[in-house]
Image (cartoon, rainbow, N blue to C red):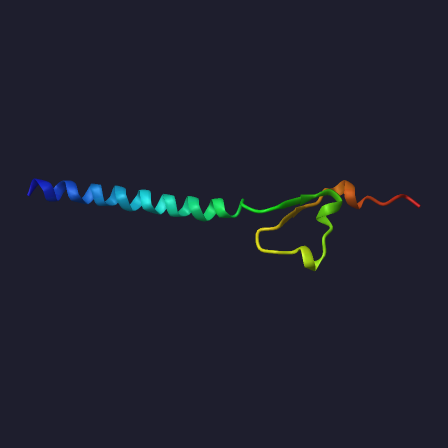
Length: 66
């Protein structure tokens, strides 16, 4: 009877650690990939692929003031 009382928290701890490891694996996968910045970020449809990320800065889009 004593062993049954310990089985509940033990199983809960295993399930929680499994869930955390799955969440970390899914979240970490989003960071794996290429990050393009600057002029390279201005790609076209041929450079698009899963995991490719682009970072644009506001300075890239400033007008020349003509």
